Length: 120
Image 1 (tube, rainbow, N blue to C red):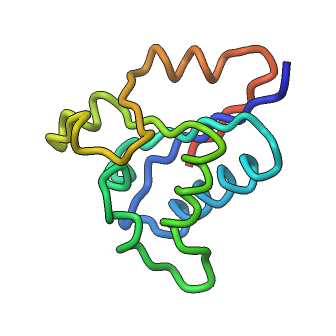
Image 2 (cartoon, rainbow, N blue to C red):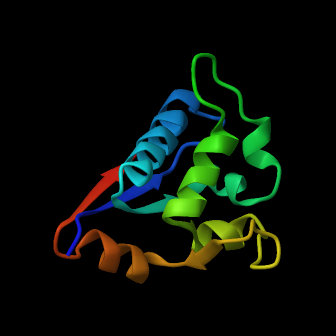
Image 3 (cartoon, rainbow, N blue to C red):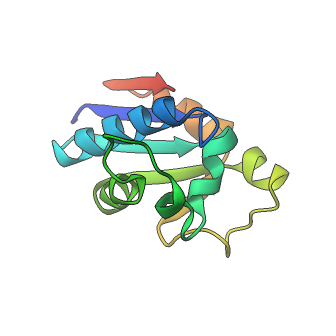
């Protein structure tokens, strides 16, 4: 079984460096061939919506929209169920390829054999 990386990002525009770090690590890991699962929680939940990642700017960082596209293409992106509900985000609102799932799925992924979980 291949090693997997589960990245949970809680930060958005409120903590741009931490947010960008999470997306960068997830994107690089996915491009390197790891099985990557990126979880959008808290303020990063907004990036599950079309166009929101394009609005994010951080000097000397790859565009968040590009990092997200890489993970969507090569890995999985999940929006937290409770975070989505608190923001009135439904399954029809999110980008193609983004699933909505809860803590049980996160725990299952994070605790799988050969999994490494990071929280930003």
